[in-house]
Length: 317
Image (cartoon, rainbow, N blue to C red; front, top):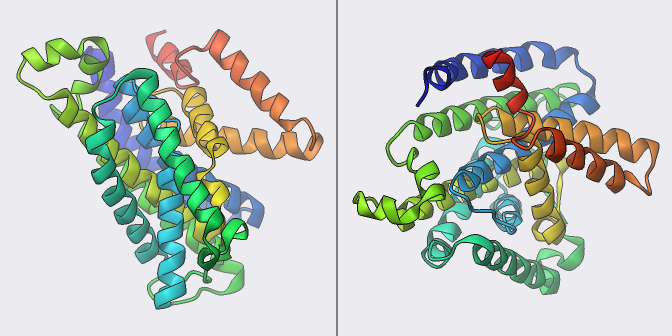
């Protein structure tokens, strides 16, 4: 690892802490719609953070919406069947459910590489979508509403609900991003570029590429489940569209937009995506996809390593 990258990695925890303090301090003064947009950006950023781990191994998952949806439905069903409304409990339940599913499916997916990995993950996600659409007990294609969330058993006043959810989401996101940052510094985390470059050499060194990919797949799924549960409680509604292929495509879009240079990049990309989406839909409801596509095209042409490469260029300069 170069000296510049080492210094950048050392600054990451401090930068994450400053961002957390800024969100907590500015949140009470922000409009309700801004807090909602930022909370959803944090939820999607958690999913993209997991995709970043896979992309560093050279793997692209076209079915990450599977775990996003599993986390959301786990949180919604826990509230529906057991009356649990505590946001932190629901987020942890969504994360655990997604990680458990990934632990089982990972034994299969860790065997595949390239387009086979992507298409197999997409196929499994669409199977879940089909099952949810046909299951009337879960609301079929309409889904169902989620119980109003509480924090440690307390329901904040209506004017403070958005901020309370945003504050908890920011703290949880900070912990998750810091944990992934620490993981990337471990021997198992550092295997990702080696697996991408030459998997055979990794095996010759005595490391198991399949095991490393399985671990990263489970971590990515847990983060997606965490984000799905957060999104479900923030929006207040769940439906099978959360598992549809277009949702997975959205996460891939954000990953390419942000880049994989830092654990901060996924959240920056998710926020920019949310702003572009909101503005484009407001200005042109029928052609907002064209605006998103044009933005992605510009990034691919001029910033092939994502928006985060701008910060690297600035530091190098």
